[in-house]
Length: 272
Image (cartoon, rainbow, N blue to C red; front, side):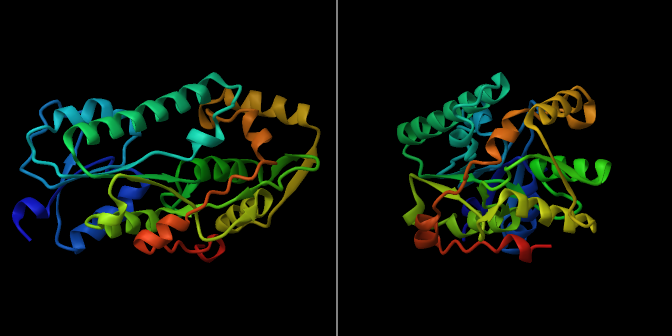
């Protein structure tokens, strides 16, 4: 392997996926050059591969700045939120979907124009370990640790979820580095287990060492509680759409990933 082929430029090094991917690549002998948006004078050696773990829409600024580095391969992450939040009533979530769509469209256009093979991953809800749980799990853990229970609307919490372990996503990146079957393709990446929303919550209770506790109350009361929580710094980002989605199945088929690069994520309940 030449030095050029051994070099990888990586953005989003502090992300939950980066937490597992960086040591994996270093162990395999790759030389990583970490991109920082705060550093206005990023200078890189010639590199074969660019891995994008930062928000997909930031590619619009980053990729043009990397021209001249000799990149011949791009692996980037988007999110299944591009589908699950498509019809959200929340302006913040509508903006998120718009940004995801624009980022994905830019990647495809840039790769086609420059004839650079790309692979795009869209994971479902990502979780990590206790020290670095991930954004969505961190919010749930905050509620559990603060309140000792989770309020749920009556007759809800049955929508299926398939949480995916960040370590499995890191392995997917490594498996796809030189796998031609994945060139110019997108994959929805689910976890290794489909389970009802309430059972997923029970898993996070066990993660904190607490016994699962739920209180079932009318939706309008839940909405009032979320409105109050959202106005605090600790719980910014919670909203009523989260309640609506509890009854919706958010399962995505990862068959193509299993076929193309032997994607084999672990079961959620085996991760704790």
